[in-house]
Image 1 (spheres, rainbow, N blue to C red):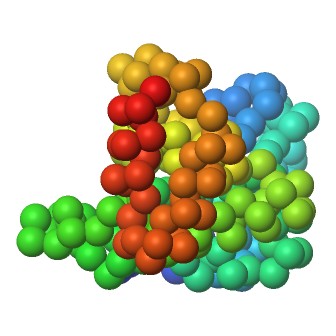
Image 2 (spheres, rainbow, N blue to C red; image 1 turned 180 degrees about the vertical axis):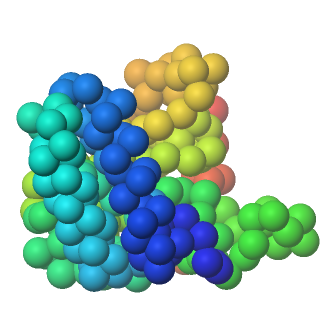
Length: 217
């Protein structure tokens, strides 16, 4: 929540340009994807893209090879970015939901504080509804979307994320097997119905209903 990540680069463009230069040179002409973290508003993403163009031009003048294909995306870690205009969702090449930070900002609960970090559930219906609005905006504008964070590698959480439309999940190799297993034996449309039913029943979280559903299979 302080002066970190891309915010340092915005105030010290020289640092950001050095990092972008290193990425371009390391790619050695191969396709490159660059994701800018902690983007809170579209103007920050626009600034980052302009800096990339400056670095590309400089590298060409120096005679260095640059990638023929560069995809530029953003990490959605702050709720504010989800409410950006359709124009932002059209111009970004891809979005990755940074679940760990997004959840702490959504619930105002520091994930480093043991007194509050376990109080809020990823399967809280308000949080799932929020994620669904991001999914719908991405679908509307043809934006590639993924989810990155601890919850992506947790089978029950991954199942619900897939059910609301997030089909690309980033996780540790050890989590792939359990997540794949639960997805293969579940019907995503049934899971979505359980989420809808939980809303009707005024539940805070869909977790209990999902656990009951899995136990019955």
